Structures are given as C-alpha cells and as structure tokens.
Image (cartoon, rainbow, N blue to C red; front, side, top):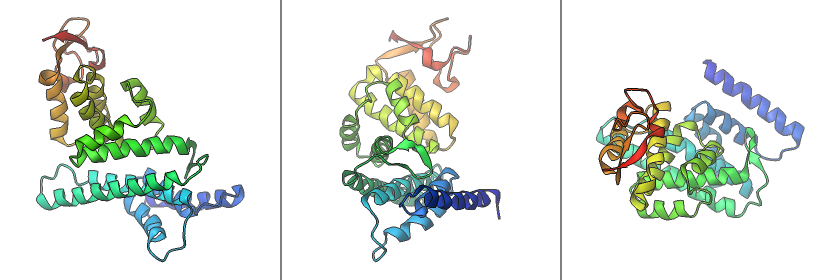
Length: 272
C-alpha cells in the first residue's frame, strides 16, 4: 500500500468515525472523496461518488448532491489538467471531453445549491462554508467556460459573482473557495481573459496573478497560455509596465526586474 493510499484509508476511517460521533447524517462517501481530492487521487473520487449518483442508487439529499457534484467537477477538471501539454489529438479530445464533463457536474452542483438551505460545511473541511463553496463553484464554471471557448458566457457568469471587482478581492475569494490549488491558475487565467477584453487598463494584476499561480503549480496552464499572458504584458496592454525603482521595462518571463529584483506585481503603468 502506497503512502498516499494509506493516508486516504486512514482519513476515511477517521471521517466515518467523525460522522457517527457528530451525528452528521451525510454519507461518509463524501468525506472519503474529499480526502481523495486533497491527495490528487481523482480515480478514488470517481469511485466513491459516481455510483451514488447513478440511476437506481438511493436518493441523496440536495445537500449531498451539491457536495458530491462539487467534488466531481473538480476531479474531472484536475483529470483534464493531467492531459495538458501533450499536443496529441487523442489527448486533446479526451481533455475537452473531461472539461465538458466537469462543466456538467458543476451545473448539477449549481442546480442542487438552489434546493439547499445552506449552513453546512464542506466534507472534510469544517472551515469551508457552503456559501464559500458556492463562490468557488462559480469561479470553476467561469474557468471551464473560458477554456471551452464560451467567452461571452464566461464573461456574463463572472459578472454575476459578487465581490470580484479587484484582484485583491478575487485573491481572497479564491483562497477561501475550497478549490484544489491546481485549479487556481485556471481561474486566474479565465478572469484575466475576461478582464483583458472588458477593461484592459485594469487587467495587469490579473495577468500577474495568473502567472504566479501557474508558477506554483506547473502544468496548471499550458505553455502557450503562459506565453500568451506574458505577451499581453509586453504588447497587448494600453500601457507599458516599468519597474518603479529603475524604470526598466517589464520582462514578464523574469517575473521581476533584472536590475533590482523588484517583483512584477509592483511594476507601474507607463504610456506606450
């Protein structure tokens, strides 16, 4: 048994014991799936939850359906990331199919959320509230729509999420969204795309956030997506961006100033 599998089994046992002792009536399968998602064990998430949603399975409550589809949407999105960068036609088709599947489960979760009273916490994470998870779900839906080429729908959906007017506000929402960390870069990339179309003068912080999130999780963005953001910083903005200390023009691939190491986040707009 691998260390990861052992950790998952141990967490599952603890989760089931916790459910019994706390009187939580939700299925222990949700806690098992949440532990598996944290460990990146996507297949274990699918094995734990998909049979519970199949035709003929015992009916789950709206709350259980919300959390199960919330977890499965992330699992499918993560599985799609594992196929990124291959360049092979079959892999690209499978990746698109997985992203469509992730969007499907995200839609099911959104529908279940409308029939849920809220007030609960996420499986395996008592610090994550239902309302925070709903915001995370909407951010995931925006990222999937943008990735699948439905830019207008992504832009409309992003506009429906409260508290997303600035990059700082979004950073707080993403950080408390419950989304797997490997999905954060996809969210930032999608929001950057949306902002660069709608209000390019304010898109620079979103571009930098997308690059930072991608650096933290290699493979979360394709190489061409990273290059596209870097190219926008150099050529696509209404301004040039320069180091506030020495006025060096931004070289986004360096993520900072080559002269004094001022981070890219602090660069200031300058008329082109």
